[in-house]
Image: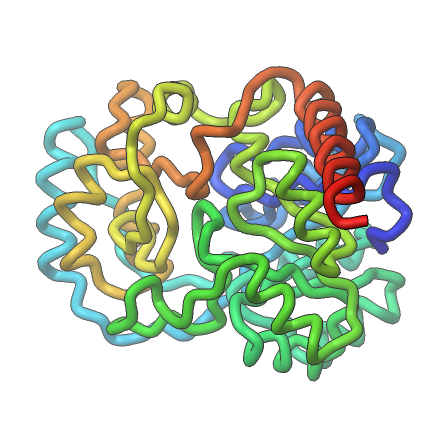
Length: 350
């Protein structure tokens, strides 16, 4: 699935805009692999992005889907009022804080119809029946896991590969369940630690992700047993990425800490610390996607106004080390750095 890449780097699916067909095609052309982000899109929009990506590259690429969870019973009252005040500043209405399943069933039919080579899942596993349908259709199934226990569940439903996500990763943790009282929503494992723990219990191919922005990071996870490294933050400032200008500038400026917050979506996600994170995180409920639907139009207005203080500035812990430029040049730099790190390792250890 990923073992035959010219360079074992994968462009992560970054929902909400950063991942574009152009970014996926560029990383693929440079010898890596790319995932389209299916999260937040309608089935028709996903169909269009798959078609566009196929026009841009003749190489295989993947699609990521969000697995829907339960509606929950969290009280959003206070959080709604806090965001309503921000909405008034921009002259927009808050979104309706309703639960939805992100159009999961319809989008699953799209990837089946398009015979997408690799379909990855975040926030849970597909049902055994859905995994079987994908396999029968010729697709491989990858599941994002954040703990050894989640890895066991993914193996049980027939996953072909696991995307092992460390807590260093930007944006949403791929937790199967968000523990409301737990910092970060649940147990926190670093990418290398989790990679070693998971590799001790399964022979499935493992893709490491979480805070990887340098070629030496890629070399490290490959040495630890991964077949490839999945990078998101490293491509946020790529020319082909759809990252909003204010988000790009905040990344380039540096200096902000990162932390987990439920303020924007109701699920733990690593973001640069801005006013919204500082003011709303402590009281933000575990209520996804209700909070995401509530804040979406307000965040969009902030982005349009160029105000980074109310935007979801998702990024990994090492974002300050990530570069910019064409995606192909980023991949080229990563490859050179990985080779240098491998050469150094051989010189020091052997």
